[in-house]
Each structure stands twice: as C-alpha cells, then as structure tokens.
View 1 (cartoon, helix red, strand yellow):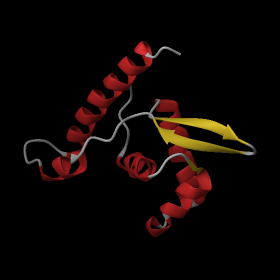
View 2 (spheres, one colour):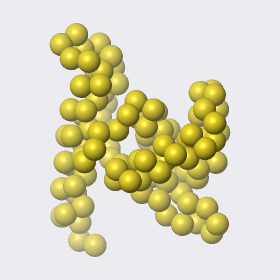
View 3 (cartoon, rainbow, N blue to C red):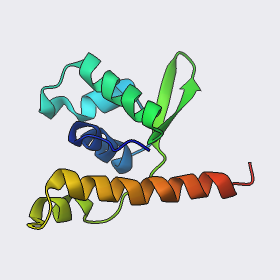
View 4 (tube, rainbow, N blue to C red):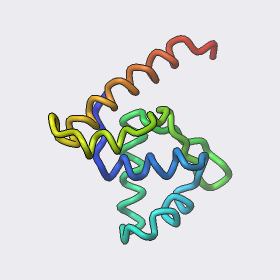
Length: 110
C-alpha cells in the first residue's frame, strides 16, 4: 500500500476520534485548519483510493470510517525521533498498519 501524507493523517485522526462521519462532518471537524472543503474531500478520496478508509452510502451522502487501527503514540514518536524524519517514521507505521489491515481482510469470514 502507498504511504499516506501528513495531511491525510490529519483526516485519519478525525475519523479515529469518531466514525462513521460524513464529508460535511469531517469538514466541520477540520474547520480550525483553514482548509477548503474541496481539499478535504480530495484527501478523503485519496484515503479511499489507498485503502485506508471505507465509504458506505447513506441516502445521498457517504459515511467514512477508518480501516486502519490507530497506534497509540505514533505521531509523538514520529515527531521526537532523532534517528529518522517524521515522514520515515510515519511510513514505517503505515506499512505495519496496512499489512495488519490486509491480513484482517484476508481472514474475514465475509
């Protein structure tokens, strides 16, 4: 799986806090970021494409939920690591989580 960007990670944080959420709810939760609505919807679409989140139709809207579990302290470790950059720490976390999510999907009884 392709690693996710720091901006995509911010969207993941919102979905980890509460899911499922509509795109409008994600936009409202990120209002303090001063990101435009189309930017946030683009980030949601990228996360869908990368398999980090799922979308379920709910009437005329979609509800988004994370497919990856949040690892406690991943952002703190990424920021404080002197041996690697934040991007490197994030990519390692992403690979571990993506592998776990793929394994879970393969073993799912569905």
